[in-house]
Length: 182
Image (tube, one colour):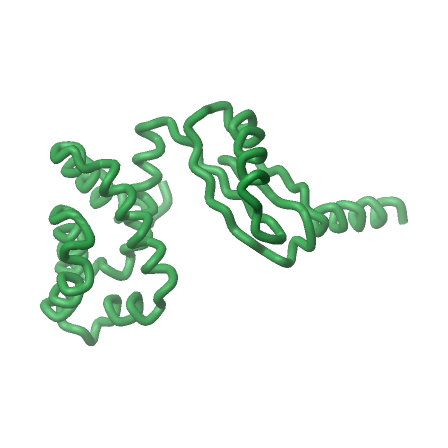
């Protein structure tokens, strides 16, 4: 188990148990995804809350002001607990671990699809059925990313499986093949 998981797992497991006891798991998972996206998109928020200069009470007040009414009371309690224990800086790792545990408990595969351009609804639908076959499950969560460096095509990652159908990947493989010939 990676070192960060030894810190994040107890928080994630306890929070998931609280959510289960309150029948809030699906709601909490959706909120975790939203808070995680906000956390990753806002370095200012992340840096301010992780700063050792800001007092714990000020962090908790800021968290309350930002998230009260937006997340469940148990979620707000998790945020305050992390602030109390000087762990709010690893909020993203705690939430990612929470989502990972949720997927494990519900046998949901996570696929990351990185494409050169945004995929249309039809392309997403077609790709979803193909990725489900690779993952071997109907329960699938797909993260869509765009990386123009791929030039064209896409890369699909499901667990340890990687399918590289990108032009950049083809060029790289062609270069390696030419290097072996020389």
